[in-house]
Image 1 (spheres, rainbow, N blue to C red):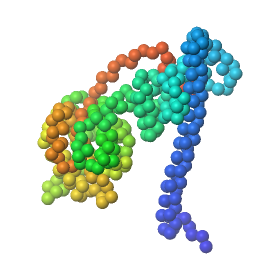
Image 2 (image 1 turned 180 degrees about the horizontal axis):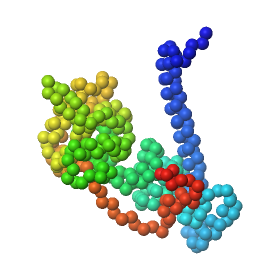
Image 3 (image 1 turned 45 degrees about the vertical axis):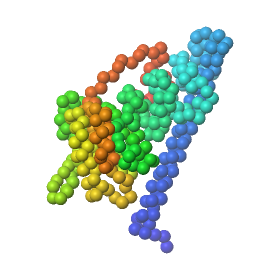
Image 4 (image 1 turned 90 degrees about the horizontal axis):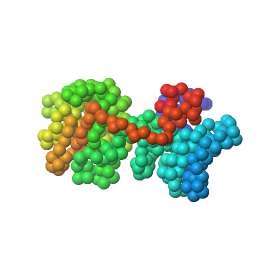
Length: 350
């Protein structure tokens, strides 16, 4: 006699199986998308390489791009993406990545709009590869990729002052160091530079999705002003997170003043309390992050040397001054996307 799937005997096994099945479907879907992207980007790279070869080695002039665009459109009327401006991007792609190994690199697995973003906003190939890898790893949309580039995520990653190398074993210490950045850009809060700590805390929880994005992949929000009771006294942690990859709690303390050595002592106390009262046996040691308005790096390094628990110190910025973008002879990303998919609503191009 068959048992109903809703009965306790079936339910637990079914839920585990279904959770695993969802992961398999999602992985397969991601592989299919990556495969389709790779085929298209590889084709575009090959076309760009051919254009470069004929222009540089055979002396063909710039007019070949317009001629090729017309002929490709005539030969493949149902295909989009063969405009002169898109062909220029293909040529720029082949110029940036001239080696055949390009087809195995992360850039070749991204959507074309992401590739265009990398070409438009970055001139350094190593940085392009870094952002491409992170885009694939975290599933960044084009708008998120643009934001990460404009906030210089590459230069900020792993830049916080920490004592992780002395307080955590090598695999965990490396992962923890890479999980922190410096500075943190909080310009999405809309607060003035003289905002108070509670104002910043409140705004962060109101914009928690954006703050989690700025913190980086793996952070899960636990609570604000998280209450701890030690020896009959109450203490409140500014912000408490759990890092899914590090498998540990992360305490974030906000200070609207420059870093002071005594801040490390306060955070050290909170970490000890979380480890004693909240941390599970299978969790890794809790780590702390002091977000200060500014810091003297050497003072922060000295202060962390005598601290027992793993922690880092970084600055935050409430306002960001973005330099004017250099004008390029290439068209904008929006123009390219409009040519590729003119029927796509603006909201879905993000």
